[in-house]
Amino acid sequence: NGVLNDLLLVYGERGEEDADDGNEKEEEGVLAKKELLAAAVLTALRVLAVNDEIIQTMVALGVLPIVTKALKLSVTATTDTNDEEGSNTRSSSNLLLRKHRLAAGALGLIRNLCGNDEIKTNLCLGSSSNNNSSDQQSSSSSSLSISSTPSALPHLLHAMQLYPTISPIQEHACGTLAAMALRRPSNARAIIEEGGPRLIIAAMKRHTENVSVQRQGALAVRNIVSRLLRDLDGGSGGSGDNATASGNTTVEVEDARSAIRDRFGELGVEEVLRNIAGRHQGSVDEAYAALRDLGYSVTLTKFSAEDLQEGNASSNAIGRTMMFGEKHNSNFRPVYEQSAGLSNAVDEAVSNFGA
Image (cartoon, rainbow, N blue to C red; front, side, top):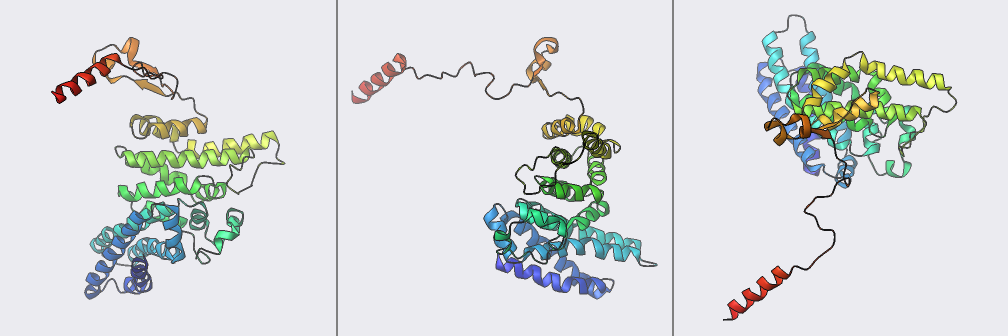
């Protein structure tokens, strides 16, 4: 882990200087190799970040500011090149193609790091923000090197704007937003204020056949909405963020709830969830949950493929989804009953073997 961290440090220290000289042909090859190496290192770290213990070890080694800087480099260097007067369009396209690997690697790692509630708040709001003080625990803050972590949220949303056709970037970005909003109303508010809903819905509209994007997008919508609505009702959900609706009148709370739903409704979220995410088997549950929390009328229906093939749709093909424990398997016997036939077969086999 230390070796991977050192490689990222080298890229973080030299990447910006190289980006300034990136237009020089003799530097292009060197910079491209460094970017590929950094992307590979970020991908390796993402694969390793599988539990909280490993994540905290990475954070203690200083991975948060490095991965944030890598994500920033993947979007800001590209923007600078595009803004230059008389810049070459083909050169800009090649740079975008190179930088998207770095963006995907950084977003994939950030997505996994957001499995830790404290870390995801620092990544979303930045550790220097006053808004996240109630989300942090002082006992764990002393053990994690997060004192200088900048917010990764603006760069994440910029990456979604800059690479709208790159499905891995859109998937990782939506998955990261879903993780950031989970159990953290302060994060959910920041995502809405920064324009996250528009980019989430845009990704789902563009990648209609990508189930992973649909699932993560629907999950992000559901987590943002449900967390903010629950916060209005005064439920902290054990998140440590106690910003509740205490003191507000019922009318004020209802107005706030309507405002949250309208932010998504005006983007066409119902159409996307019903007719795009809702028609994929891998994202239908998340789409259902998002529609339910948004206050739309929705039911979850089970279709029997065998009955549909037989043309018996009117009677058995459609039915209400069975919940766990509602119906027992007809072949399941809850009480053990000794089988005489089995015993006789065993005795016969033993006698034949002895003979």
